[in-house]
Length: 317
Image (cartoon, rainbow, N blue to C red; front, side, top):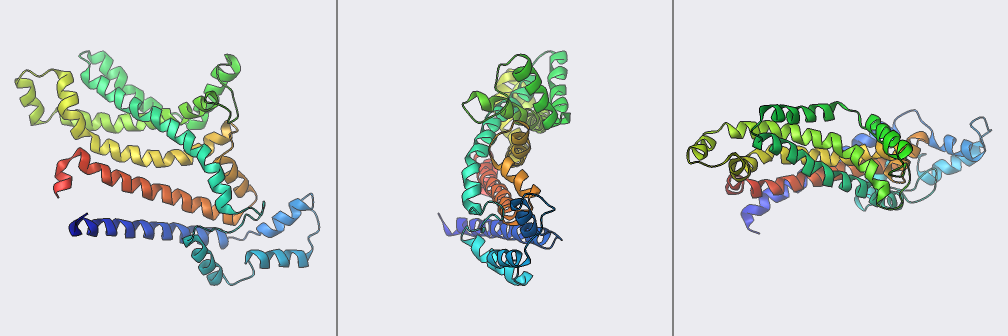
């Protein structure tokens, strides 16, 4: 790596660290300054009911254990110092390490999001390419209308519909659980179809713009076929906006997976998030927010590294 290359890389890394710090600070302000008391909620649940009498001495001891008795600025600096080393403390509800809790459930959610992305990207590319290559205007209009329909469908409604048809009515796939490849099919389809629709919309607009360029007219004048023009010339030039959107929606897939995991009763970050919100488990919520920010940061860095491969002008600049 040359010295000229090190400058932009260092600048991107500094920006990534700033984003992570901003996400941590914003989450801390939003969570730790709210009028909530996770300690009282935890002790009430352990005492079998919210109406149970809480021992003030026991509550004070738990607050000291988790550092909730400290001034806000000291809590912030303590948590920030731990977070730099990957330690987000201990769950108030389960008394398990937040890092261990999140990393234990992360593979299930990442697997679901990855499966959805493997379906969404080829489908999102195939639809606009099919429309551009088709010589029949009616076929092109029909294919172009599909992404708009896919974007307008809520993911949770689509998941319930797939459950009703393919699990309860025809019993093709299991409705819930994490066992086997068949259990991931319906959740992955639920996540992938709206994502593919977004990619297809962006790529379709960019592809139509590229097909109207002067170099395409020149290729037509030389006798090149429509399919050759689309795959050889237009698709690569039109792919930059689609790559950007694919990266962003790829990051959003993990957030969407949290909702879909709840619909399909899958063990993953979705269940952890729901439990943490319900029980006001502040350390777990803080860890999840930072994880989401880290995923978007890494996705952005990957997208920026792909740009020069698609457009040599970016690499030269």
